[in-house]
Structures are given as structure tokens and as C-alpha cells.
Image 1 (cartoon, protein in one colour):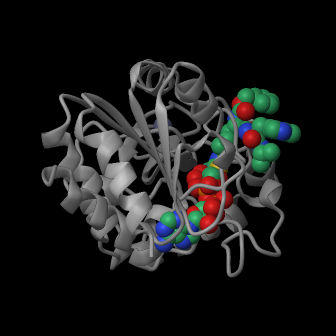
Image 2: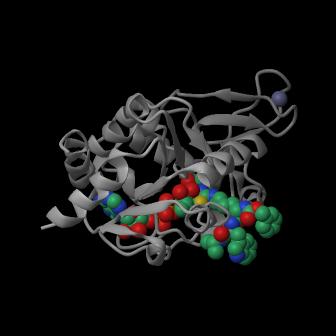
Amino acid sequence: MHEQEVARAAELLRSAERVVAFTGAGVSAESGVPTFRGAGGLWEGQAVEELASPRGFYADPVKVWRFYEERRRNLAGVRPNPAHHVLAGWQERFPQYAVVTQNVDGLHQAAGARGVLELHGSIWRVRCLGCGREREERTVPLSQVPPLCPECGAMVRPAVVWFGEFLPETVMAAAFAAIERCQVLVVVGTSAVVYPAAGFVEIAAAAGAKVIEVNPEASSMAHFADVALRGPAGQLLPLVDARLEVA
Ligand code: BV8
Ligand code: ZN
């Protein structure tokens, strides 16, 4: 099972110099982190707009803060899985390599990945609504209501990108540059329904990159995939990695 696709994916990667790993919640699934959509998803039965949007936060800051506080608590004991470790290890292998993630869980960095491009921000950072100062906040549990900024006393919010908000300019520019130039794009664990991130798959394919999708299900960008590894990333990425050395 998957033998042929694993061999084909390794063949595409073996000779590549410029590679991008583009990831979503599925890459953290085997670490025990619930994905957003699909059975048991974080947002199943909850209106996303309520929780992950400025309007939702201003309407009920405590409710939205508690949604993130609960996710931080759930993440506190979570470890990277083999998929994160393989993707981190590839930074030693490919001369030009980037991990571009939609995830806010910090697990790529926990596995040793450097320079991770976090398109949707980080659940481990908070930003002040008053003075705009952003800082790392790893205390868990932190609080049941949004804390106040130690500098100016205003309320702080999670430093994540909510629906209707722009993605961080510098991160977008760096991701765009890497995506446009890459020879192989490895799309791992994303349903590819959230824009502008999802659009990166089409941009890479249009620029001539080979696309490898690693996902038990076909994402909405599956038609761009040259190779589809239809299974869990924590099992399949180590198989591809093991084949990279073997010609
Ligand atoms: C923007 C916050 C410009 C942090 C997130 C109509 C009205 C308003 C806006 C829009 C609209 N139509 C389109 C838009 C734009 C909107 C959008 O795309 N909406 C979609 C839903 C239609 N985008 C935005 O608003 C973006 N900003 O456009 O700004 C603008 C400005 C003003 C006005 C309009 C536009 C901002 C997008 C960022 C939103 N923030 N998160 C947080 O709380 O986490 S997005 C959220 O979804 C997460 O960040 C997540 O990363 C992201 C994508 O989800 P996935 O990672 O793909 O996860 P998912 O559960 O969906 O899929 C998991 C996959 O893994 C599955 O395929 C599954 O099969 C697979 N899997 C499972 N197990 C495994 C596995 N794969 C491998 N191995 C396994 N073991
Ligand atoms: Zn402040």
C-alpha cells in the first residue's frame, strides 16, 4: 500500500534543490491536536465567525479568549509527531527549503524547524489592543479572561489571524517568494479551503513546481497534485524520507 506513491514522491524530491512544505492542521493530528473541519473538528457545530473573527472577539472577548485558552491548555502537553520531525530534518537536506504553515500550534518549531513561516500567527503570542505590543506568552493556564497589557493596561488578544484579517505582510512576502520558486511543493494535512493560503498550491503548480499531497483525503487542491499519498503524514513522511537516500 502506498509503495508506488512513496517511491514517486522520493524520486521527485531526491534531485530537488528548492522545496517548500506547506502544512495545515492535519500535520498535527497524530500529535493529538484536533483538526478544524471534518469529524470531531474544533469548529464542528461552532460558528467560526463567532470564534475566529474580530467581530466575534469584540462581541464577546471572554468567550473567544476561552476558546483559545482551552486550545493552549490542550496543546501544553503535546509533542511533535514524526511528520514534524521529517519536515524539520529536511532543512538540512534541501539547499533552499521553507516550512510554510497555517497552524498556530508551534509544533514545527518544537521539532526543530527554523524560520517557520506562520501565515495565521501563533497561539503562543498575544498582542495588545492598545499599544500593539506583541509578546510570547507560554504561561498555561493563563487566565479565563483576556489579560491586560503590562505596558499600557489595555486588553490583549491572541496574536492569530482571524477571518477577515490580513495575513502578516512580511510572512506573506517570504512565503510567496519561496512558493513561487520551489521545484517541489509538499502539501501536508490541509483541506486547502482557507484563502489566501490555499491559493499557494495553485501558484506553485502554475510556476512549474511538482506537487505532492500528503492527506488521507483529497483536499480541494488535490487536482494539482502530481503524487497523492493518501494516508497519515506521521506514517508516510518517514517512508518518503527513508527513500530519499536510496537511489
Ligand atoms: C483574508 C485562525 C483579506 C487561528 C484561521 C467570505 C467572507 C469573508 C471572508 C472570506 C469569504 N470567502 C473567503 C474569504 C476569505 C477567508 C476564507 O478563506 N474563508 C474560507 C473559510 C471560505 N479568509 C480570510 O478571511 C483570511 N483573510 O482573506 O483577508 C480580507 C480582508 C477583509 C475582508 C475579506 C478578506 C484569513 C484566513 C485566516 C483565518 N484564520 N485560523 C486559529 O484559530 O487557528 S484559519 C484556520 O483554517 C486555521 O488557521 C487552519 O490552519 C486553517 C486551514 O484549515 P486546515 O489547516 O486545512 O485544517 P482542516 O481541519 O480544514 O483540514 C485538516 C486536513 O488534514 C484535512 O484535509 C484532513 O483530511 C487532513 N488530515 C487529518 N489527519 C491527517 C491529515 N493529513 C495528514 N495526516 C493526518 N494524520
Ligand atoms: Zn499595551
